[in-house]
Length: 118
Image (cartoon, rainbow, N blue to C red; front, side):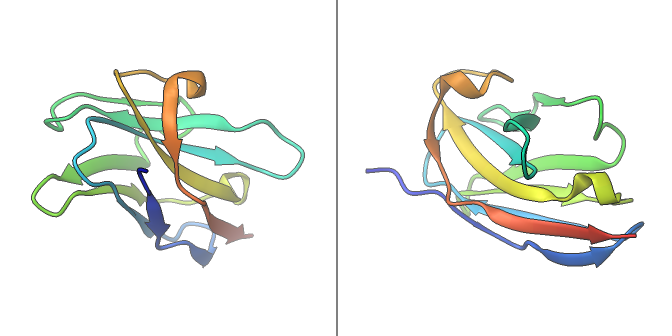
């Protein structure tokens, strides 16, 4: 049973920053997704095993950075210039291949709340 554990969420003012972490033991392709109240879960960012390949949703490009430290089995999402519309529960997930499609992700964390006040 694979367990993904997110941490680092919280309340921040617009324009601020947060860094989310996800403990992901030995998993290859990792992604971050988010779900706001009343909305579908949406793709945020993905990274390949070595960390050389990344992909971002247009809404976060230039503001968010996904990275990983394989020695620590941890994936990060650095979020800068946060906006109120970034408010959501953020989930990390693991897949068998590189994708932006949440349907191919097999394992999910429990989520961490990010709230951005205006």
